Length: 390
Ligand code: GMT
Image (cartoon, rainbow, N blue to C red; front, side, top):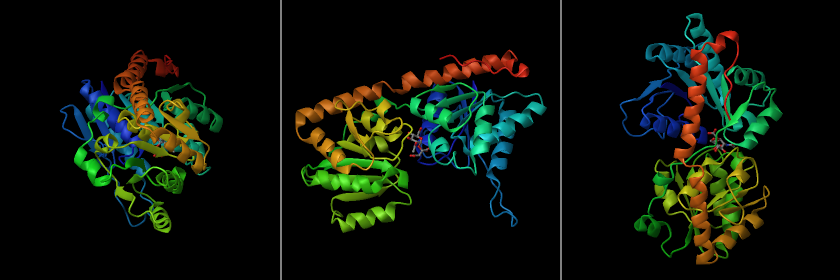
């Protein structure tokens, strides 16, 4: 099929997932067209059947806010027409679902029908999307999508709770390429980070308030008081100055490294002993899944979709938001002896296999086929949206 993918090209989970999906689909002989305002960060490697179209947003002195949504809609019209796209798959509702709706309307006037799939990722519903500035447009454009997917059962429920959605939302979990993430650790790399064989603890995020980076540091301090450890903080964002100040205040500058945004996460996960994710909310927690694929158990909060991937006492533990003492104790419980630690590692990898790329990508393909067939049969003309099979 000829598939158009729209996403944020940044390090955020939705962009990462969309890019990994596009590359996997291209590897399965589909023609994949990424339509984004910058080359997605995870988009690597040449594939003859993979294309990238940049959304240009020209500025003009009149514009305090250049109209990205219109630029994206116009680019979608152009790319669909000139590349005969069979469908558009947009990731993160704002503003991608409304741009896709607009593009679809324009194309329909020219008798070109293009089904739109919207994948909801989390904050597009639970944080930004529910703000009344955006809510009516978000609800409308989600309802106008021909298929809606959510990355966890929790996000599906949150969406129904937040908006009046008149359609079925299908849960298609996020995925990870377990084989790619099961790397052998590079000893020299480990030695640089943890010269005295300390435990390596990792947190990776966009350093936004919702991630509770201060809790990461407090958990680490309590753990490090018992088991000598090093903390790697991957990513960047608005909470970084606060996090740096807290490290200085707690006298932990030698134990904590801020390594910024990183491309080759599989190398980092390979040397990770434990992943911390004490967020206020996670619709899924893709970074936790990637860490598990690398063999790292996870200690997190018991929020959102995290209970759908973490099994307490087997591949990690979960505690209430802000309970840094409990989370530190859980980290100690996992790392305290070699046998327990090995068992958690093995189970973490096993759990990641349940979300392996080979299991999840066919679910998207199946959805595409159903939708495409429905459109070919002209069901859209009767305003009858093809039913999505569970
Ligand atoms: O919160 C982030 O890290 C960014 C955000 C995004 O949209 O890029 O992530 C959301 O989507 C990810 C991929 O589906 C999920 O794994 C994250 O849990 C989700 N973040 C939140 O719900 C806060």
